[in-house]
Length: 236
Length: 90
Image (cartoon, rainbow over all chains, first blue to last red; front, side):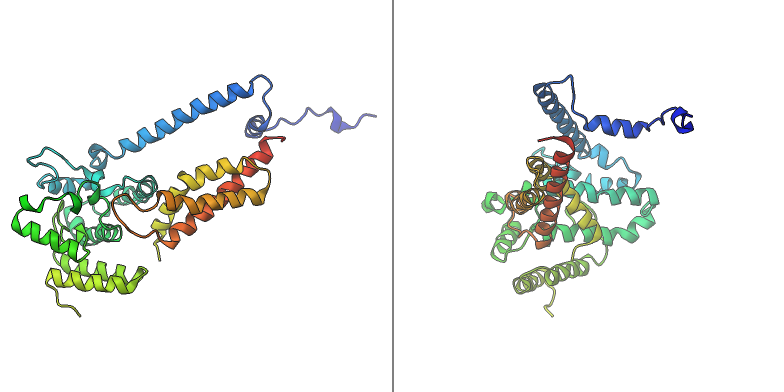
């Protein structure tokens, strides 16, 4: 007598399982050359598409497409980085997104928090925005101080400055900055957005926190003292 | 001490950068798990040296950045050799 199990139709395997097996099976119809060329072209298309999409997220239109970015945009449009005699414009990504690949990717991944807070409505009203302004500014200052104002230096460099055609005050300040090892953000905190009340104390706090956490604390303490002197704040 | 967001960003950047991509590619070149992990780890050391910092500033690359790149490189190497084991008979 036949085993009843033998009479059952063979169990159909799931589509996912079959696709997985097919993915790992040797191809019987494609040559190695075909697979290599197809893989190479596919890689170029994928990488080009990825990079293109990434660049789209660097545009001003993309950055300011969220409702909460309207305040920043309005302030920025009043600054020299938006309109100036030379016709060179720095957009959001020029100051907030690094050029170097790994830091750019890091910035893009970390920017997910901006989408999260947009959805939560953390700064959805002018009142909420003002409440958080100092905190948001401090986060950017911290990043800029820690990276020696990396994004500023994509366009600006002390080495390229002609102090003879700068205003006397600017030339003196830049010379002092070189002599004392300061960085752009030490003086230019409000270069593109309005400054909140108490910003100087907050900046001092940012500098001190960084000095404590970074290696080579001793060197940094000297730096903090110099900045305090420059800002006209009494050293502790 | 880096924040969670900072940590996730650094890991993601390593995965999409040289340690992740070259690590997998090198791992696919061997069936030996240890060799794959070592090659991935070496890429993890070299990547921050080659690509870390920036052209305009002289900020030291942090130990955390190195550590994350090495761990990602090792894991990528292991993934690469797993692909070799699963998808190739040689």
